[in-house]
Length: 223
Image (cartoon, rainbow, N blue to C red; front, side, top):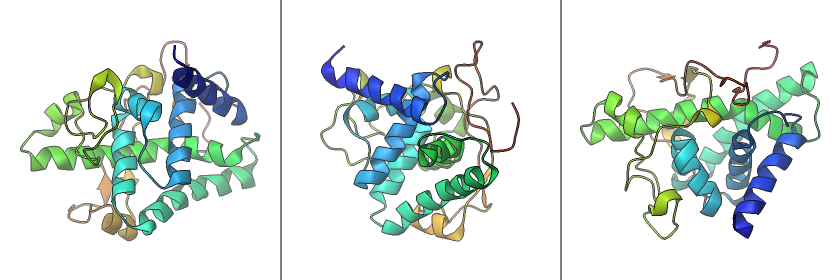
């Protein structure tokens, strides 16, 4: 393990401790950390974060890259607004006390980000004439700048140049339907959909055999 990989893994475990979810697979902490980092730098994920998302969460990667590449600060505000909704619910309900409630809110919002990202992937596949079934199997992504960064497996960090594997059970997220706001449709270039609902993303089973892959659930919903 390189120094960079060690730091990346340590950050993922620390994130889980900070949100009171140390029992989860570190992949959940890595996903939260990737979202946090992208929001902090207002940019797409790079290096170990990019490699992780390419292999474990291509739909989440597609969403983050679409937001980063939109060139509109409003796209980041729509992202923050979704997280803020959960942050307020967690604060008012006091059901998830932890050291970093904002990070906990990000964790609860991951299924929504992945659902929107899956729509981005499906839309790109349709434009290439690929059926949604084939697209979901290959998990391609058209997002990215096409420059520089190397992701997992030596593929270019610009998603869309190579097919991505299916998401692993380490980061299994529950299937949900997300209703896009008018602002999201505009800044994320998803306005041409005939329906406001975003296709579900993730897998029907939100947990693996040892429950380490348990996906986020809305506050107030008991497992």
